[in-house]
Image (tube, rainbow, N blue to C red):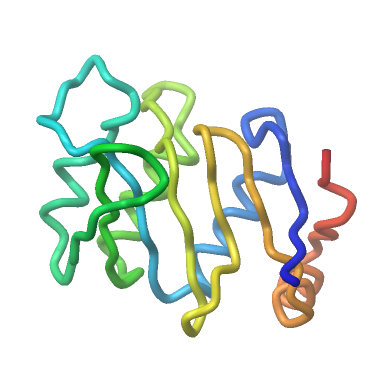
Length: 144
């Protein structure tokens, strides 16, 4: 059974930029979920949808987690990493809505997930715990 550390509010976590940067750098693919409707700037669930739709190598599938919704899957490369960084570690002078729901994978294994904009699930595989520990982050101390 897979276990994970839950960080209830990433916006209140001082280590968030460092933690997210590490996850971005070591993961190799992602999936992000969106309602299957036209983009609307007023709907925070659709934040970033046009940009992710236009990334090279994106594949789409129906998502069974919500009626009338889609999964966009693709590689984590320089362009997609920059999109995630802009939305999830915004500058104070340029607030952008965070992304609603996405997952990061490393070699096909789910290792990092964001749900409901601000809840992080960091899967506690030994290799991931070691990667974070080497960078000075004790995931267990961030839980809650």
